Length: 398
Image (cartoon, rainbow, N blue to C red; front, side, top):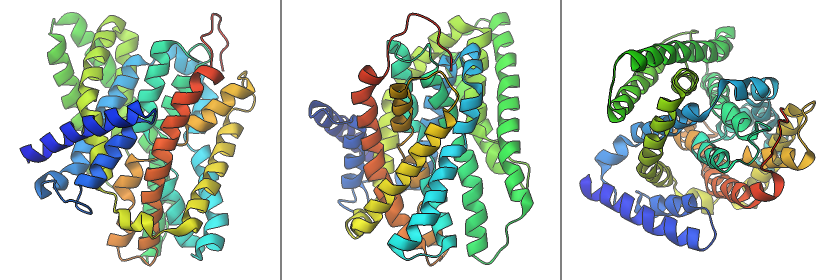
C-alpha cells in the first residue's frame, strides 16, 4: 500500500505539473495518472488501497468543504439567499429533464433508464468547483457580488437532492416502488445537516474561546467531528435524512462567524492538507475509470453529455433571474457549475452492480462525464474569471 501511495503522490505531482505547463488543468493530469495506475491499465495500485478508495475520497471532500465553510461569511450567504437555494436543485432538475428528452432518442433507452442516467450525471463536483471558488475569493474576483459564495453554497447541497432521486429511481427499476417518504429525505437531510453543523460550530467557537488549544489540535478536533458527521449520515435510516458534508460546511461557517481569526488560521492549515488530499482524490477518481467504456461510447453519448449540459446551464440562468448580476457574470456562473467527478465516480457503477439493464450505458456516460466535464469546467473557470468577473470596489449584492 505504501508503494501505491508513493506512485499516487509522485506521478500525480509529475503529470499535474506537466499538464499545468501545457496550460491545462492540473486535475486532468491527476485523472490521467489514476487511469494509468488503476486496475484497467497498468494495475499498479494495491487492491487494499482501492478497497478504501471511497473513504479516502470522502476525507478529501471533507477537507475542501471544511475549508469552504471556514472562508464563508454569514453576511455573504444572506446576500445570495434565494439564488443559492435555487442552485441546490434547479440546475440538476433541468439536467435530468434534458436527459429524459434526449437519452431515449440518442441512446434508445427507456424513460426510467434515462431518469437513472440523469440522476447519476446531474450532480456538480464540489471537489472541482470549491477550490476554484476559494481561489477567486483569495484574489477578490466576484466576491462583492457573492458569486463564489453562491456557487459554493449550491455545490455543497445539490448532490443530496440528486442522490435521493437516484436511490428512488434505481429502487423502482429493480422492482420496488417510489415512496413519498423517499423525497422527505431531501429537506430533512438539508435541515438536519445545517442544524447539527450550526450547533457544533457554535459550541466549538465557545470551546476555542474558553480553552487554549494549538491550531494543529483544533484541526484534529474538527476533522474527527467531520468523520462523525459522515458516519452519522450512513447510520440514520428511513425517511429521516442527514447530510454529513453539509454539516461539515455549516460548522466551518459558524466558526468563521464566532471566531474569525481562528477560522482564518484553520483555513490556512486545511489548504496545506488539501495539497495531498487533492492528489489522492483525483488520482483515485481516475482509477475508477474504465477507459474501455469511454472508447466504446460513440458520438451519441458525447452528444448527449453536451446536450444535457446545455439544459444545466439554462437551469443556472433561471436561478439568477431577478438578480443584479451582469450577463457576463451570469455566463461565468453557468460555466462554473458544469464540472462533474466525485458523485459520478461514487455511484456510476451501482446500476451495473445491481444487474439493471441500463448498467453498462450508465457507467459509460458517467466515465465520459468525468473525463469531459471535470477538465473542461476547470479550464473554463481558469480562463474566464479574469475576463467575466471584476474586483469590485463597491457592494453589488445578488
